[in-house]
Length: 394
Image: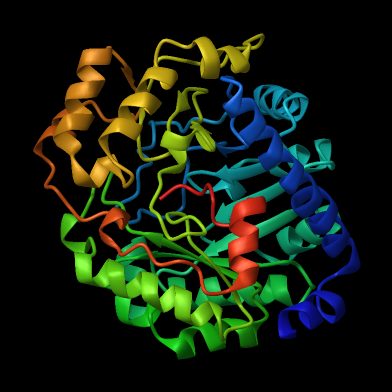
């Protein structure tokens, strides 16, 4: 009831209207179309994650993005073509990632060019000033998902910056004070684990006006993977139980990306529910699995990549046979061997990417947690019939 009242009295009317129309109503239809198409042997992702730039103002531990010397931006006409193809296939929800997407000069052209879609903006928040917040409010069809990676001390270490926590909180308040539907993301690792599982943290976010909290499990990738930050099996189990319990008592929406309504683990990339397009235009299984056979050009038939492509269809089948968890963590050596065998292109901007995978340790993934059914009817319904918690990257 508190959540409903927040939507009615605190959320801007234009933001609320586009959220309901573009995400909720269209989202239900998109998921139905996705399932019907899959049942008939066809495939097109229910939604895409698009990294529009690899430029960033921070250098986070475990980040998959390796910047090129001058930075790489995905051209606006290419982004428009991707979204237009998505809409023809009844897909209306897009995650805009980086690097830091607020460094992309035509960001709001993307959002305004497709006012019939809904966008989730993955941002560290440090560039989210009053002008940016006003543009988000004006567009109405975008929700900022602001990364909050720990307290004052942990955030600076995790993000490779200074005074990051305060700036992040300021960005959150800047959005919520305008009535923007605002989310907070946390990549849960050992350095912020206690904060993540503290009920007072959730209450503080609610007090700030946040609508939803999206928990990810830390994936150690990139130039500075920091494997020592990865969670142990008992911590993943505790995180899973914490989310289920708090969903019954907290008005804040708590989202995960790893378990379905019945509590069974799954991989969105293996299911084909979502895929990732990197700043160079390569179609990847997900942001942290950086290899591909397929690059989007000006006149590319994206649909063909998903149904007749030389790589993605066979990789999804292999992934489904291998694990319900995250292959990057559970068997990085198998992943490296598969990339070599399939002659896939290394799209990471790191020449030593394959060697790093081959030498990476085996870590616990979300598949170690017990299969616990959602206790809340709302969460069970949302996971079965909408996008809710069903497709974010890990």
